[in-house]
Image (tube, rainbow, N blue to C red; front, side):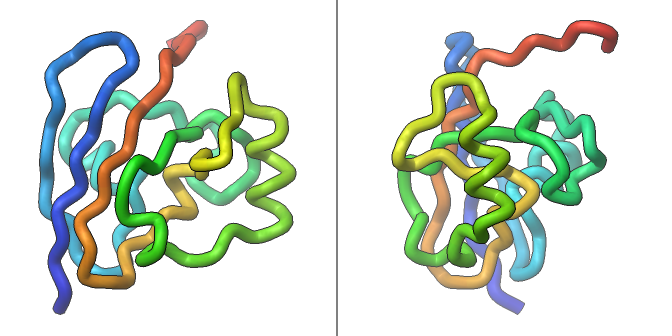
Length: 109
């Protein structure tokens, strides 16, 4: 089973965190398994834009972006060319991944 590292950077200035991820796990899975707060209002099924992240490295080893994911990213706050949904960034290669978690609004949490 392939294992890579995912480094989480935080727009709020929190220290970076790096955690191992196995093939088939998503960025959202790894975040939640390591107590990293990453919103996921739809439960991680590509039904919203709350797990929006910026992929800084490792994009080539992630699945291609789907039309559905692209539609939700268009609704995210400050989408960029490297925007993805954490629930759709599934580890499938050998390249380490670096993501930045943008500022989040945890109203109601």
